[in-house]
Length: 303
Image (cartoon, rainbow, N blue to C red; front, side):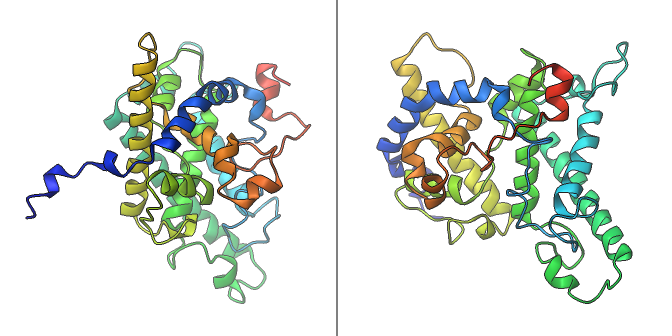
């Protein structure tokens, strides 16, 4: 074993200019995060975000398309958590209150549960689509190309959808609840071209997975590595912020959810990718505001 390895310190590779940019953007990031009007989807994902994921059906198919598949899964998970209207009798403890997501181990276990349930749902969904198709064989591999041969989501897409769902739950989580605190402290950052580009730049151009797109996240290891790098950025930024603001309280480090907002909203981050320049009004997830209220906006009176 190389004796130098125990002395490896990831902080020596950090570009502190990016840390300073993140810290200076924190007030805007917090303001975006707590404003429910910035969430414009039904369950955290819109047609643009999911366009690269196939089910073997036409992309815009409202019955069998990828957004329908995701929303079906997400709706069940919301009900399971006791966050949808009428999903949990008043006398019962809601599902979210039975979770231990304020601890990192508890959150990781819940994250794994969500990923596994999404995989099984997707597998079943593709089977139903194929059975319902008039021509189940012709063109099937191309239409369902983002799934494995067995009909499961690829690593990058699986975790992108799960992490977007968890981020969406901020608008449903009761204020001051363990669910809200657990999401803020422990949620992973959704990995895509934009977040990977900022992580790479913060580490001086480092590229772990061989590229700066979601498709380069081909293994569980590469996903976990990028999440650890994101948390290293957040921890270092948080440490510096608390030195500057000793009265501040909260998670150890800057929350990854605020780092995610920085990725999508800050002008410095947008300069790393052309999409941000073309659509500067987009929020995290590439979503443009829509006028029609979502189900949850109507249920909580937020329009």
